[in-house]
Length: 386
Image (tube, rainbow, N blue to C red):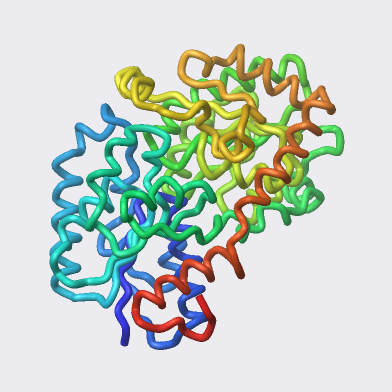
């Protein structure tokens, strides 16, 4: 058996890992998987050596109280890899954890691939000088990333963005309305507060007041909260007393049905903006972190926009309401405009199609392209050409 050790540290990486496992199995038999993952990777057959949710923290102020626990998990992961001697290690995103693990196993002779390039092109670009030697190949999701990493000898390969395989554009609006008894004149608005407890705890109180304000202007408003697996119970507890009761969606298929029914969305920055864009949902992007983390980030960010869909579009296609602009007054006003101004919504949808076109893999699906690169590093291209 060929041993493949995969590491994902958050919900989006868990999805990528599950799709990668499926694509690898489709291209080659006799693969054995182990590592760290969440529910999706578990469904694909990976038994995590510890709960992935322990790694899902973000921001300096949020990480500091857990630094020693995270260090122990890093050391545990390194020792596990050295003990089982996998044929290849594939780390997925989560650079704060994964790159430390990669450094810890350097010199072992184990082939290493990092999947999802660190976004140092966006902030702290000087970090790129620390990467040579950490991996044998870097699998990039965004078309502009290889040009940034190649001059540093980091072997970048663009494989396309797996969001294109998500099915986010195939939801069923009628099914969602029927399932939740939503009237024909109701106005569903999707809320996506993130996949980390640190994110949801900061954003949900703001979302609550935003819905209160918006419902005063749109009486048939129906909030729909998309809750990631690792925070679903916490989200349910935090929203049980909302004056405008939200529908809480926990599984992916129902979330995409909600997208199809939604007239607008409010989401944190990240892959969620690409999913919503695929579904053609007009959106506003917001985020709020600890003020200390925000102050440090502002000094280091090198790009004009934080929303992935805006970066691909090359401009502010969707509004970004961050930190001091993440207020119920501003968020509700922006959502009201998206719901009532059909021209603004149409402009966003047209921009989505153009931006998403650049995410296609050079050949085949993004997950198949990534799997082919993994197998090529193992000395075979499997049943499909890379």
